[in-house]
Length: 310
Image 1: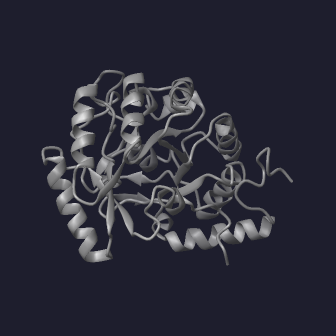
Image 2: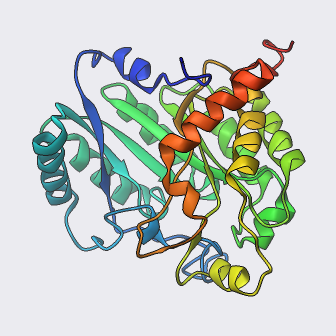
């Protein structure tokens, strides 16, 4: 059965001339940190976050980007037959540095053999007008995606998880990026403490005012050594069941335009770091459950947007 959500990341690349090539991301560590880690805005980082849980290069802070790219692309070429690569500044906040350093790092990555673009994960409060101008300049010759972590449109939730930014800051950054030549990806998390289906739906609807090309969504999962683990151990936080997550995910996707690519619909952590829930490791199970949920509803991605309302 055809998936009931949109997956056009390949299409986005095809529009830039890479239709017949196998393109894969190479995770990089650019030596960044975050303003809610270094004390600029807060200490300790997000309550759920350990970069090792989602970035395989989180410990590569001192390794030059060119070497990380060479090793990562060689591995992907040998093991999965990748032809071209996107340099993915994944660890920590990939725009949290002086603009001169950012330009040096991004151009170094784009100069590497077989690299056709860059993807930069960051926080909305770590993006300046100078950053936007630089990304637009780079996008004239390469595929460029800026990935903004929102997680929730509710400031109360953002405070509770120690994000140390607001929805208004996210909105201001999205406004800055409007009409520029690079792609935008928005990152959401379902199952944050204190949230339920009404929060997920409201967050999805809050994105209606902007045009963006892709989205990443995943369930909140408990990682060892985080403050969330302590909340889980004390019973203050209970992870979503798979059925709860799939229902919330369908709610969100129904309110996301059908033109938006879904880069991620679930995520987990390495076995040595993941505490709960165990079901999030079964990606095929989540995908099958999502398709069955859409089938039961008679809906699909975008069916409850303004253009797709039934």
